[in-house]
Amino acid sequence: MLVLITVILYFGVLLLLSQVVGRRGGNAAFFTGNRQSPWPLVAFGMIGASISGVTFIGVPGWVMSTDMTYLQMCLGFVVGYIIVAFVLLPLYYKYRLISIYTYLAHRLGSVSYKTGSSFFIISKLLGAAAKFYVVCRILQMCLADYFSVPYVVIVLCALIMIWLYTRRSGIKSLVWTDFLQTLCLLLALVLMLLKVADMLHMNFVEAMTAVWNDTHSRIFEFSDFASKQNFWKQFLSGIFIVIVMTGLDQDMMQKNLTCKDLRSAQKDMCSYGVLFVPVNFLFLALGILLMMLYQQQGMTLPERGDDLLSGIILKGTMGTACLIFFTIGVIASAFSSADSAMTALTTSFCIDILGKEKDEKTRKRVHLCMLIALVIVTLAFNAIGSGSVMDLIYTLVSYTYGPLLGLFVFGMFTKKQPCERAVPYIAIASPVICYIIDTLVWHYTGYKFGYEMLMFNGLLTFIGLHIASVSVVHRTC
Image (cartoon, rainbow, N blue to C red; front, side, top):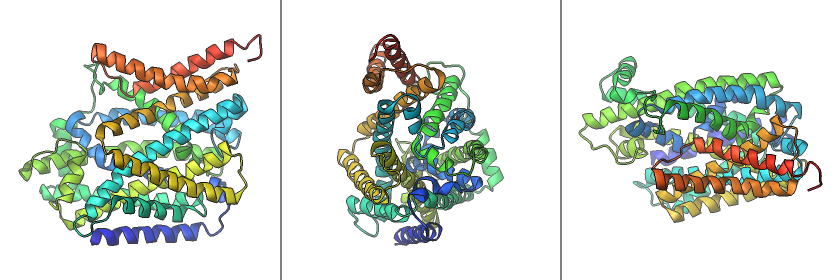
C-alpha cells in the first residue's frame, strides 16, 4: 500500500509542478522552452534524464562480473561531453536549431535529413520502450503483495501520467520536473547507501573505505586487450557513445538547446559531464556494499546482476523505508527518461517528418500518437518476454546511431555532397554489414565486439557516403 501511495503522491507533485511552470503553453514552450532555461537547472536535470530505470537497477549489479571497470567508460564520457559542448553545440546554436537533424538538411539535403531523423525516431522508440518495459515489471513486483495489477494497466497508467504533465508545455515543464526527479533519484541512492552501510555497522566514511579496499573495486584493465573491459576500448567507446547518444540525440540535446545562449549551454554540458562520474561511482559502490550485505546475511548472490539490488529490497530484507526509497528512485529514473523521450519523439516527428513547427493541433495529436506507440511497443516487449531478445533489440538500437554518426561527421568534416538517392540505402546497409561481421568474427574467432562496433558502424557509413559523393562529381545522380 505504501508503494502505491508513494507513486500517487509523486505523480501529484510532478503534475502540480508542470501546471505551475507551464501555465503559458504553446509550441515555442513545448519545443524550446522559450530558450529561457537556467543552465544549472538543465545540468542537474540531465543526470536524471541519462539514468534510466534499467541503469538504476543494473549498474550496482555490474560489479559482480566487471568490478568497477565501468568507470573507465565514464571517464570517456567526460571527454565526449567536452567535445559535444565545443564542437556540436556551437553548430546547433549557429543555426538556432529546434531539431538537431535540421542541420542535415542545411548541409546534405532533404533525403539525408529525413533519413537521420527517421533513424532517431525508430531507435528512440525502441530504446525508450525497452527501458520502460523493465521498470514497469519492477513496479508490478512492488505492488504484487497488495494488488494483483495487470501489466497493461501499469504501463497505461504510467504513460498517461507522463503524457498529462508533458502535453501542455513539453520541454519547458521537463526542465523543472527533471530537476525534481534527479533530486529524488540521488536522494534515494544516498539513503539506500546509508541504509546498507548501517546494516553493515559502518558509517558512510567507513563504508567508502571498505568499498575501496574490496577486491571488486578494480577500475582499470590494461593487460587483456581482448577483454571488453580493456581500458582503451572502454575509454574510447565512452567518448563516441556520448557524441552519438547525447550529441546526436534529439532527446538529450533538446534540453540543452533551451538555454538562452551558447555559453550557458556549454557550461551546462560540461558541469553535467563532470557530475556523471561521481554519481556512477556511488551506484557501483552500492553494488559492492550489497554484495557484502548478502554475505553477512548468509544469502546466495543472484545469478543475474540486475537482481542484486531489486532482489534484496523486494524480499523486505532492508525494510519498508528502503523499499520506498527504491520505488522513488525507480519511478524518478523511469519518468525522467520516458518523458523526455516522448517529448523528443513528438518534436522530431512534427518538425522533421511533417514540417509543422507552428501547428499546435498537429503537435498535440502527434504527442498523443507517441503515447500510443510507446504503449504498443512496451507491451510487445512484455509479450516477447525474453532476455536474449532484449539483448538483440538493444544491439539493434545502438546500431542505429552509427549511421547518424557517419552522416554528421561527413557533413561537418567534408565539403562533398553525397548522392541523395543512395543515402537511405547506405544508412541501412551499414548496421546490417556490422551485424554480419560481428556474427562471423564471433563464430570463427570467439571475439565479441562491444561498443567499439559503434565507431566501425559510423566509419562504414562515412565511407559509403564518400563513395556515393565521388560518383556524382561529374554527373547528376
